[in-house]
Length: 142
Image 1: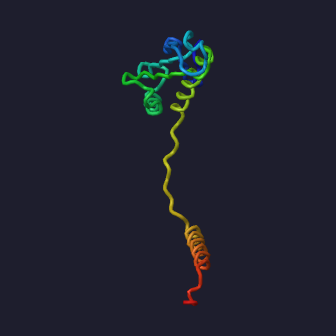
Image 2 (image 1 turned 180 degrees about the horizontal axis):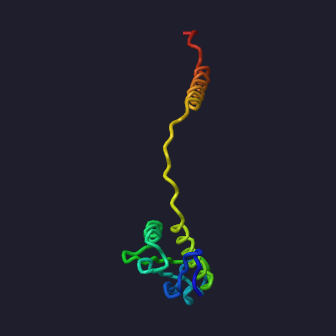
Image 3 (image 1 turned 30 degrees about the horizontal axis):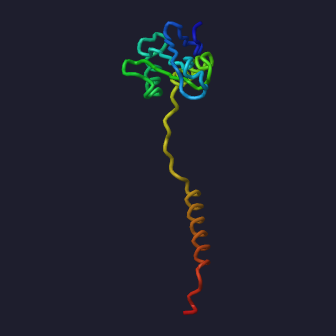
């Protein structure tokens, strides 16, 4: 069944390679017998479902999870059962691609503090200094 990411992006099952491996963590004796962890591989570089902009952004977001050949590798062993780990791996892939497909936020424009905020800051510093000065003992006794 194809994996629907957005109205314009659909990943075919042939694009995804799943491999089941033994997981560490919870599971008792079962952890040594059953391969419940999922290693999901998606070849981003060869995918026709993604635009070049989305591929570049996806490589940026994936970081170490992307190989030099352009294959995205997700390793999931959060749950004790294979189907839950498989679903979670697919969900994480969809979230990552959706984030990469979203338009980047506009660049932040640096602003200067207002005159009022400068005055308030200096007034607060003056008041705090007065409080500290009043705590000191009088030196008239010497």
